[in-house]
Image (cartoon, rainbow, N blue to C red):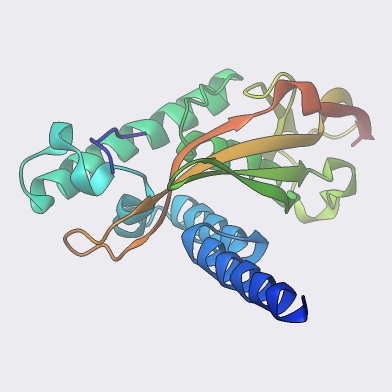
Length: 226
């Protein structure tokens, strides 16, 4: 997102000890599945709750971005403006039927949470460069399981279509049939970087980018009769 400048038996036992030490060092240097889940969950919750103070620290480079300001106070204020513009763009795009996802996670998390039926799992984590990892997650949307009884007549709800970014509005109108091709599954690749403590942000993993993998898009056709 925001770019900043970088940064005999005895023998077998000895090798085993060395390998164990190496494994411990590697585990401390990049997130395994559990750490990836924790980081992503924090980020997703911050986006959903519009917790811009938490999101500031969880967005790679924001705390050191010269383009956001000279002081941390300026950077936080300009970050809030930047994030607010993306939230508004998401709302506008949702109403228009097409959301610009961008190369970060704000619009993507908001978009893929539509319908309140989305589940995700971490598929794997790999080192892309020193201090940088890629985490692949699989999203399952489960739109066919939406309980329509919780919607009152006249309510409009939104579902994701294909390709990612397409939004289908569904209006609950009596005696109406709706048939839609909606997302069933898609994998998202998250790029995370290790960031040192800065200002009020602790040392942490932060999200640098997020992108759906087009070749993993799966859809299903749903038909409802209201």
